[in-house]
Structure formats: C-alpha cells, structure tokens
Amino acid sequence: MFKLDNRVAIVTGSGSKKGIGRQIALTLAKQGAAVVVADIDMDGIQDTVNAITEAGGKALGIELNVTSKESNEAMVEKVLQTYGRVDILVNNAGVSQKVTVQDMTLEDVTRIFNVNMFGLFLCTQSVLETMKKQKFGRIISLSSVSAKRGGGIFGGPHYSASKAAVLGFSKNLAREVALDGITVNCVAPGLVNTDIWKSLPEDQAREVIAGIPMGRPGETEEIAATIAFLASEEASYITGEEIDINGGSHMD
Image (cartoon, rainbow, N blue to C red):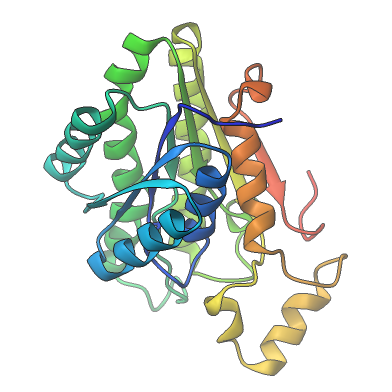
C-alpha cells in the first residue's frame, strides 16, 4: 500500500539536517517516487540526494529560494524537463523564531511569513497549471500544533500565525482544485525528535514532554509516513483536512 511508483515529488526544505524534510524525501523515494530535493542549501541538497540514491532511489537536487517567484518557476521548469510531470508537492520549508509580541519587530514578522506562508503560496502556485493538465496532484503542507494551540513549544506568535495561515489557505485551495483531481491537505506536527528539539535546555525539555500524554517526542519517520499516505492513491478522497501528529498534546 501507499506505493508511489512513477510519481514525481517535490519536497521543499529537504536539504536541512535539522528538520523533517530529509526524512520526508527519503520516505517518498522508498515508496517509489522520483524525489526533487529542493532547498536553499546546496551542500544539504547533495547530502539528501546521496542518501536517496545510495538506498536505490531516484532523486534530483535543485537549489530553491521559496520566497522568489522566479526561483519557484525555474525549479518547476527543470522538473518538467527532467521528468515531464509533477505529481506531489510537499511544502516543508519553514523558519521559526522564539520571541514575544512585545519584543518582535515588523521585520521579524515579515521574515517568518515570507517563508512559511508567502513562499508556500509561490511554490504551490508554480505547480498548479501542470497538475491541472494532468488531472492529478497531491499538495501536502506542513502546518504545526502551534497553529492550533497558540504556541507552547517552539516559535513566537508570528510563527503560530503563519502556520495557521497555511491551514486556511490549504482549505480554500482544496475547494478550488477538487474537480481537477488535486487534493490539498496539511499535517500539523507537534514536538518532533530533531536537532532543534535536542538543543533545548534539559528543564525546558522536561516541561514540554510533561504536556504530551504519550510522554515522548514524535519521530521524523512518523511524520513522513503520514505524508506518504496523503500522497498515495489510497488517500484520493481526503482533501481540505489537517492531520494532527502530536502524541496527544492537542486534541480537537
């Protein structure tokens, strides 16, 4: 189940070792997709591409600045030249900052929204024409538990707001493109066992874990597996939804 043979998947932010994008790319490749590793970090891109190809998968690395319309359009053009189609887009690229409303600046807010929301919009827009022509597409965006519970783990209010915007944007888009064979969904991870989590002071880490009924952070593989499901044929009747992956730290 959840096989992605002959599918082409773009995963933004998949060059970084700190987040979950690399695991998403590895998982989609393991399921049979040709994965486009898109990131602003060229060294990180090559590391992810190497990891995929060494495991027997197919990968193409492309430098991408998600905040640039031209960069997004050039990426999609290169993908089409290489593979002839784009089936799956995983909007994973994101930035965070821990700061209070009183201390943040307008520049702080703009920087967070430029990547987390405006960059996501530009990247999504760049694949829509192709997906509509194909009458098939899977768009999966990373929101956050912070968007639903008002922070409490990482990031400031501007981060929570940007990730809440991702949810609203995705639901509206899901309505727009449903008849084109395109599904649009989000995942909202809670605390995940990445380098960011491991950098927390011990007392703060204990406090965060205390708020998770399952008593542990999630693993990157658990987030990636959910995304693989949403990208698959088996999820063809799911659109406009967000899946919470947080060990019970937030329950709707």
